[in-house]
Amino acid sequence: MNKKKFYLALIIFSLVGQIAWVVENMYFNVFIYKMFNATADNIALMVQASAVAATLTTVFIGALSDKIGKRKIFMCAGYIAWGVSILAFALVRVDVISGIFGATANAAAIGVAIVIILDCIMTFFGSSANDAAYNAWLTDNTDQTNRGKAEGLNSMMPLLAILVVFGGFMGFDLDKASSWTAIYIIIGAIVLIIGILGFFIVEDAPKTERDDLGYFKTILYGFRPSVIKQNAPMYLTLAAFVVFGISIQVFMPYLLIYYEQTLGMSDYVLIMAPAIIVAAVMTALYGKAIDKKGFFGSVFIPLGALCAGYVLLFVFPGIVSISGVLMKITVFIGSMLMMCGYLCGMAVFGAKLRNDTPEGMAGRFQGLRIIGQVLIPGVVGPAIGAAVLRDAETITNGDGTTSFLPSNMIFLAALIVAAVLCAALAVYLVIKKRKIK
Image (cartoon, rainbow, N blue to C red; front, side):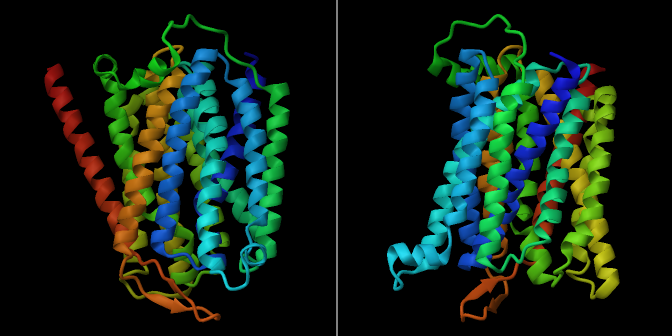
């Protein structure tokens, strides 16, 4: 494949896909919180349902793309359908719901239910295009000489997407339904256009020799005991990836609500933006270190940064009484360390999984990757977060309804999970070195 065209497709599809995921993963929570007074359990349920939908989609579509031997059609057509499904959210408003179900209906409860259902539908198209097809395409078109670099670029896109979304959302009043309508129209249209553009810039990798397994056997391939034994390093990496993802999902669904509502930082975008820029640059640069040092030579630095960020965000201003400029500086440093650890960690795990994936079988293993990256963390992490916030402080809104306030305990819970991962990896490394001796 043409090198320039490859990196162009990588950057465009990864960035736009991540912009759509950022809106879903970080702002759908804000959307149902502000528009429909969602509870912590509502938010956890939405994240969990989406994780299940993403996993099932990736398992079935990933295997199908392996059997067909093409990724491009799934990427491009998937992005088009993904864009259309995002556009549908522009109609999810209290006035529309009341008009359909009547003024006496509980518009807030119906709104939460509709968002969760639409989120699963949107996730089906997004996971088909991005999680299954795009990630398999990226594996097909890289090897061990450039996967760290490509994964570094790929892993910095979520942060760049956050930066783009934060900057774009600054022009909207998120307390108004009209702002959300405009947001969904803009994001949906962009994703749709990229899907069309992809037909002109995406190229499938040269076909490799493929086995003659049937479709359903292809789906179940990665769950065979013999395959697990044969590819043990990949499954061990996946297990570690699960714990890493759980740590992230403990706090991520509640992060922006915590910044804005609990800390009262209405200008959190201005504080987060520099942190995101630093983290994005570090992630891109760290990709080269991954290629040179390998997994164990590069995984502990991101985990250390992640834990340090958790400590700062938990202690200041959660326990130590600080305010004003000092609080914002602390939140900036803690967020920067947390984001650096998160994205660099994603790059390390992502590169290791791609290196361990058998050639020509990227599609069927995307389901396993999504189980480790999305399903288990997406179910367990938010549940831990919701449990921690079960007795959280509440506030009374202007219309008499109440909303919960996330506490700093989400960072302590995330820290405990990350510390367990660090300890497990350290023990495994010691055991491995002793066996070699």
